[in-house]
Image (cartoon, rainbow, N blue to C red; front, top):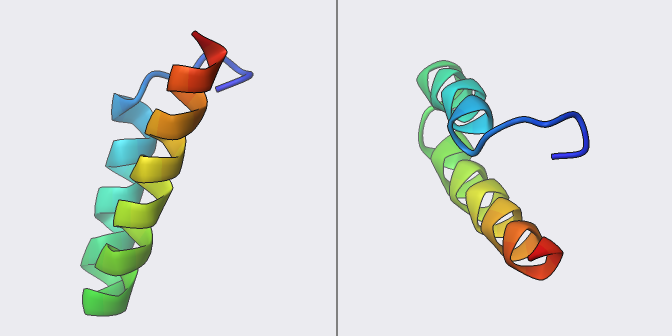
Length: 44
């Protein structure tokens, strides 16, 4: 976020992580995107 990434960019990285890591990676990816959304909302 500090480097100017859009929400789509970490989504692409997380999609690759899910492909490589399967089910457990999907659960962590969901938490990561929720964190991104929370930080984006706080940033305003």
